[in-house]
Image (cartoon, rainbow, N blue to C red):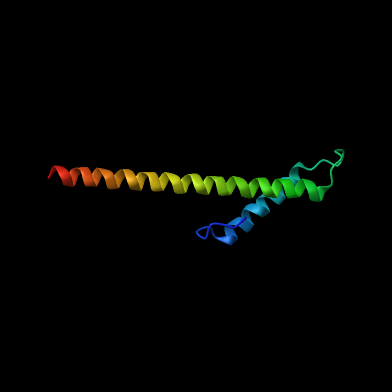
Length: 79
């Protein structure tokens, strides 16, 4: 999937690295899964979480901006 242009690719690389570190710390050899598969899942989860967090912050800012704009408009209508 395409990445929103506002997100720095270096930040996504860092999130992926955090996912890899998580995989190294949590991997158990007694499970019937290869490290590569487990790491891929951890990295993907970390990046998706970061993208969701970014999206929610963006929507929050947009919502506040719209709210502020409507408040200013209402104030201007009163004066």
